[in-house]
Image (cartoon, rainbow, N blue to C red; front, side, top):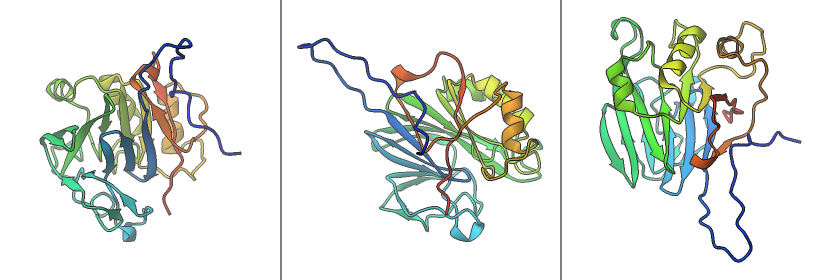
Length: 238
């Protein structure tokens, strides 16, 4: 039997005869690498869809909004995207079909882009939750950047390593900067089970001993944990 989604989805019970407002959850699914599907009442958001030839092929997925953190084959292809989405590729303040998005200009390395170029961090508000997709961020965030992002509820953090984006230690540093309620690792190979894998190193840095991946994350504002929680998602990459 497949593991259930983490227990962040909860609806308050109402007394008999008393009406209540049911808030649907935001559903987060990892399609592989840095690509996630976020589903809320406002629509479907897709982040960093990869080119099938990049080694990170995803199922064909419909979306109303696509964010692209940087121009790289593993993060910026629309070949597997169905529908007619609005595509965001850089910094700015956006409102797309009732989805509010902040794009923050950052770098892919610690040398202000000299080694690997620019990157855009996207903060996406969906179902009254603020989800922060770091793309291939390669450095800690400045205080002015933290102020622009606001109070992040869920952070999607890359952990490929310092030669690509973030080491486990640097990823943990950024998690502590953002102080989210939920941390979801990305940009790693979930099939690598070595003790020194990027995933295991991040868990060590965050003080998490063991974690079982789940198919998706379903969460509402009322079901967010009080303390930071790391959630590992199953990859749906083909």
